[in-house]
Image 1: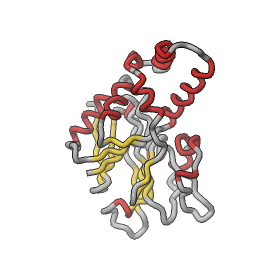
Image 2: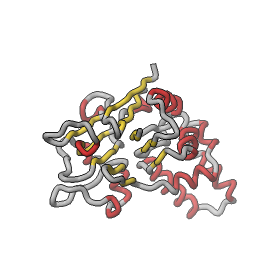
Image 3: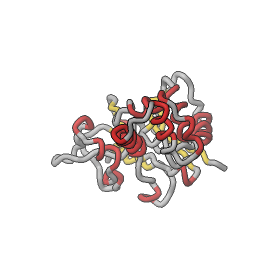
Image 4: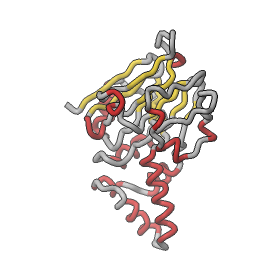
Length: 229
C-alpha cells in the first residue's frame, strides 16, 4: 500500500503509533509532504528515522526550507570549524533533541526535493499556483518559496482542472473546516474509489498541537488516524 502524510513536526511516538495502526511494512511506501522538523519534541529523532527508511519518500516543507536557508546564512557569517558549525546548527532547535543533529542529518535535509510527481498524483508541501486555464503550473516551474510556503491552495474554491491529484499540508485543516481531519476533494461525478477521482487532498491535522495524526491511503482512498490518548 501507498500512504501520504504531512506536517509530522517531531511527533515521533505518534508517528510510530500511526505506522502500527496501518501495519506499515517493507512492501509499503510512505510519502511525507514536508515539515518533519520543529515544534514537536523529537524533530531530529523523527528525521533520522525517516531518512533511514528506504520506503519513505520525503520532501521539504517550509520548516526544512527555513533550516536550509539558516545553514547558508551561518556559513556566510562564520569561519568556524566543522564541529563548531554543527554546534550552531544543533542550537537552531529549541528542544534538547537538537543535540542529535549530525552531518548526515544536515545533508539529508539539504537533499530533500521540494516535490514528488508520480503517474496519478503530486506531493508538495503548501500547494501549486494555477495558470490562466485553471490547471496547476508544473511543479518544476514553481519557485521554492511558493511551493513550500504559499497558503492559497488550501482554499476550498481552489480546484485545479484536469490535473493530477495534489497532496499537500502546511495549513491545518482546522483552519478550513474547524476539525483536525484530512480533507479530500472529489471530482464531480466521481466515485472516490481511486486516486484519479480526487482533485486534491489536504493532510495537515495539526499533530504537534492536537495530538491527532492522519494519513491517506493512496490505494484505498481512506484516511486513517491515531490520537495521543
